[in-house]
Length: 148
Image (tube, rainbow, N blue to C red; front, side, top):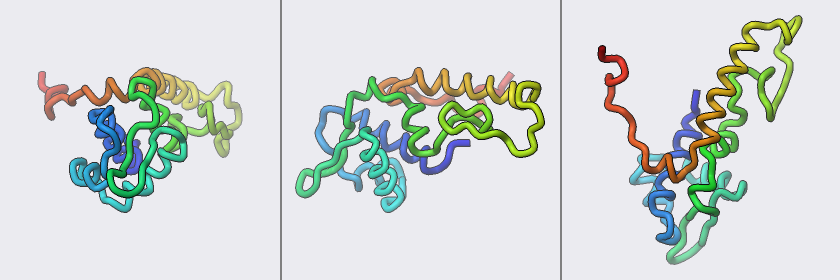
């Protein structure tokens, strides 16, 4: 499940992508518009800046801006920075592999096999969706997918 940290980080990055080319955006503007607690957003944006996704400017006219074009930032990369690996279990992680406790035979484990499929499907979507694309998407109205 996506953490609040990653969800807020994505919302902030989408906000900046929608305003790409306008210069730096005040953190108060991002926090207010996206309804993100300011102190939490400060920490999230600093982490994204340290990983090269953002640049910042202090003082008058200061704030944050994307560190590179929105079309070159994969959603999966943002999530990995803020939440860690996309894998639902550690034994299928490509970046943080760890054998599961109590596992007798990884290669015969049916749970591992299906979780690997889940990881691959999630990574396929998130790594092939860039921030520019995400910034133009809208969600379906509630209940739309379940009405028959």
